[in-house]
Image (cartoon, rainbow, N blue to C red; front, side):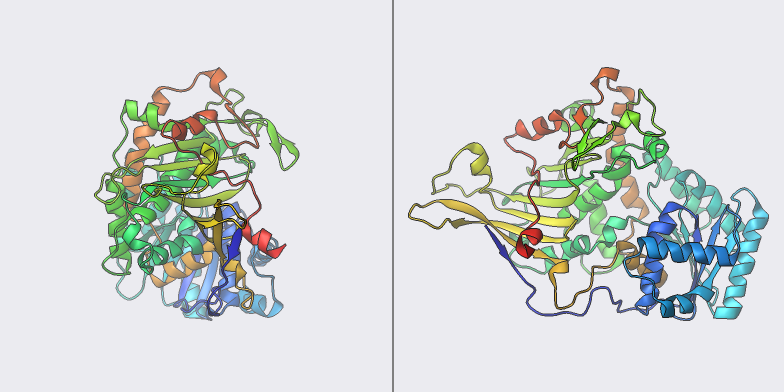
Length: 531
């Protein structure tokens, strides 16, 4: 049974920003790459279409490729047309196009940074960008340190400028482990203050992730029971049906734990578990997230063996189409032992969460694409009503599902009497999704739209601070060090079929504690309601 909850009142369209960007030049280093095409330029266009980018904002692309301004503009228009949330409107593009410039930038050639500085000075004179710089580093992690050094030496950015701002956006992964993350922090701090460094995790820009704070701290029905006394456990799943999508070389160096657990999943843990901040500002919120991450004990050898599972997908079928195994993907070692799946059980050593485990899992080539947080509440001390098998009994637990993708929204599962003469209990889902605000008719904004405008305005709330990154790496490095010292035997991988829900060992991780993963296999409640 499902009960679909519509919004109580019509609100202003979520995609119309309430804040406009200040005068500034947005520099995309790596402007011809996949991230710039798929995410950054479409997000900047959407902000322009919504009126958030005024006449004093310019966009400067920089990369190794030799391009003229007109060629770059054409590539960016094509990127918006192909990947953008909003269709290209001639009026908007005509207004934005003159503000796009391009510079060929060789990371190892200092004079090309001088050329970039000269274009930015032209931008100040022509568009009134007032010396303000937001530099987005859409480049490999190994190039970040050198690039920031050259940007500083050439005068493109400066530490704490007096009459303007200079900010750097750094994409994940921020380092490969705790030691490399600490080293990268030290290298960046030679040229920039922490307040100028915006470490981006696009998950934090998603509407449903931002709504976590509102859900927790604006609803008295949840906050009093948001603790170990009432919550049995928490599951966080980020599942993908895709493989490595031509990024085999990158994934061979990264793997699921580095790529997803250290960033996305631990950020979600911190938001689910943090204490109420004293204020809704960047410092207060990030202080509480760091406290939560510090409360997660590192795993020793016994803990890694007991509380983690790694896996690699083999050939299988996704949506009725045969797909290759990981070792058959382009750029992957035919005898690779790199994990494409990771599951972790962790505990939070705090008064609020003692005795309530958090189970995290992420993987590629799984059965369904879904990202969600499942808060599983404890059963009543004595269940008065008859139940069936163990699986049916488990279905009767109260469960709060926060859907991050697809169909962003919230489902609260409660129990109700089934119609009929017998006292039979059945679960009912009270469901809300953002795109269900039909009288508004506006798709939720892409995460990068929110994050880019926040960075222009200097709001670091949804960006990760250096101690956040290091605490997340501290926990993950305790796993990585043991995994790398004890690789699986060659015949142990692959250990799950593409199109499944992952390795059998991941099911045992919960089963030995009388729990089971929530594997969404039915159409979403939104699809049911609209059918």
